[in-house]
Structures are given as C-alpha cells and as structure tokens.
Image (cartoon, rainbow, N blue to C red; front, side, top):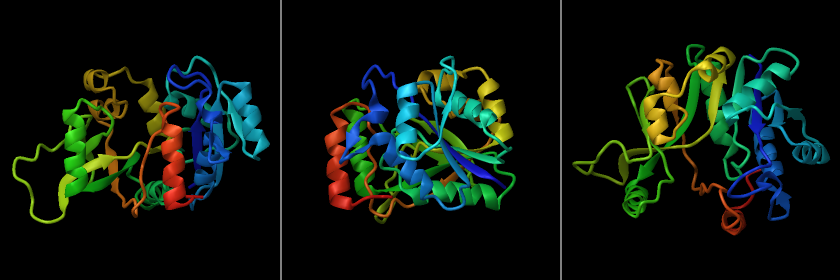
Length: 261
C-alpha cells in the first residue's frame, strides 16, 4: 500500500502572514515539518500542497516537492485531496500533516501509518496521548481561564472515536487512583484511505462541527469511524505556531529537547 504525506501550507494568515516561511532556529517552519515527514518510516512520498508561488519556490529551495492547488480550497483537507489527485499514481493512504506542526514527533505520524497498514478496515486514523494527572490538572486550569486550545477525545473498546471536544471529556466525577487520568489529548494529524478522504470532503458541515469548530466531527456525524491510535510523546513538548509570539517558545523547546529530525 503506497502511503504519502501531504503538507498543506498557505501564505495568507490573519494572525501570522507568511507563517510557513518564518524561521525557527535557523530553518523555516515549513522545512522543519517537511523534515519530520521525511523521517516517518513506511512513507513513499512527501509533498507540500500550496496555492502560493512563494511557498512553492521555497519548497524547491530545500529539495522538496510542491503541488500547486486551487485558491478555492476552503481548508487543509480539501487542499490535501486536490494535491493527491494531481500526483502520479494512486496512493492507498494519505496523511494530512499540518504545515505548522513543527514539533510533531515522527513516531506519532509513524504510528498512524503502521495502524493503517496493519488494519485495512480503518478508514481514518488520528493519535491521542493519555494525560498524566498533573497534565490533566494543568489543562483543567487553562480551560477555567477560557483558553480554548487543547482538544480531548473519548473512544470505544475498539479504539474508534466516540467524540472530540474543546471541553475536557470525560467529565472526571471521581478521580482515578494512580498517576494517569482517564483523559486523552487529541493530536491533530490524520491518516485517510483515499476513498474516505474523498467522501469526507464531499459532506456538509455538521451541527457539532459548527459549534466546536472541529472538522473531524463531520466524519463522526456521518457515520465514518475514526480510529484513535494511542501514542506516547516520550517526554516531548507539543506547541502550535499560531502567532509570531509562538516562535521563541518553539525555539526554546527545541533548544531544551533537541531536534526531532
């Protein structure tokens, strides 16, 4: 089964224009994500999907492959699908790795690829990491302050997702014994069967997707199962780059924890 990684990257951003080209410890954000994707075992091809020549030229400068996609794409999933249709060959599995996932451990993406290749019944897969009690309490304090970052997920006995939320689920009425909580934090990277991605982007926005602002809920609302792959971050810190102020924090994390790829 051919597996590809597509990295959607837009130049325009209301909060951080030109974000993919921003330098983080001497390398652009986009090159860092590309290097992470190249380090994932079992992947036959990595490309960047963009609608901007500046990004395409930059990708070429570090030896990557850029696919020009339409400006009509409304989100990263649509851009990934369009890029996939423009590539030669017919990949069985496509991974959507966001262009700002600069601190995404390669083994997390690799766990998705392994799950998809191991179980042909899985249509969509995404990772989650179990929070320690300390991490859970930290997230709880953040949510109480009105901070929306951080998505949690619950799943059934076969590890198929039940629900994703910007709130903390499940509600912990009775704290469990031990150092781990029953709360899993979702990590925003997805692997799709190509037909599942095609179906997904054809669906309308669902009511829960609209209120939570979580695209993956569209799949659940339409009966498409999402396999949750439990992963360990191995002590690595996750941090998203949403604003210019996030750049020094990422540089600090890389300085303390080392390069991922």
